[in-house]
Length: 173
Picture 1 (cartoon, rainbow, N blue to C red):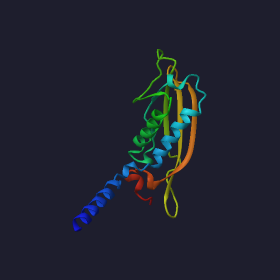
Picture 2 (cartoon, helix red, strand yellow):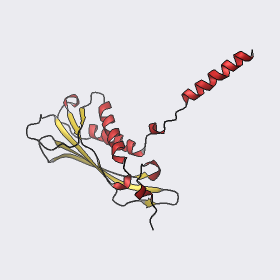
Picture 3 (cartoon, helix red, strand yellow):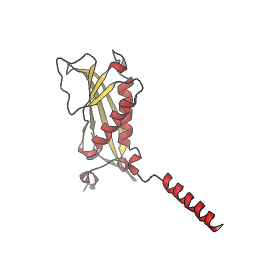
Picture 4 (cartoon, rainbow, N blue to C red):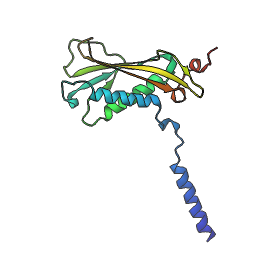
């Protein structure tokens, strides 16, 4: 009898430990949510002239103000690219380090650039710090530097959800 109880307790303990999620990186951060929101806007908002499955979007790394921390760009880019790729019947997506205009590109190629700015720096409230932001998404056709579509998204990110640099976490004098 004692043996069966021991086996049952061990089984419950192992099942309970297996169900625990110790990986905190799976928790989506505000930057990842912003990247997903940006991707949805890119997929739905512009008046695309072609079929989504024939479209190729070259995604360049986001330009991020230092106030958001060293890893902010990587988290945003990852979420943006993953969401673009996960779209059903969506475009082909390529992450590139840069995408200059070229004269001999196919008509279905587009370049997406983004800029995340902190126009005001941190705003300190009684219980937290907020970082107001302006995210600018810009689409250009592959053979032109002219802006084909652009959108600005304004908001604020809570410092608790940001991978802030040591400089950003230092209190102001």
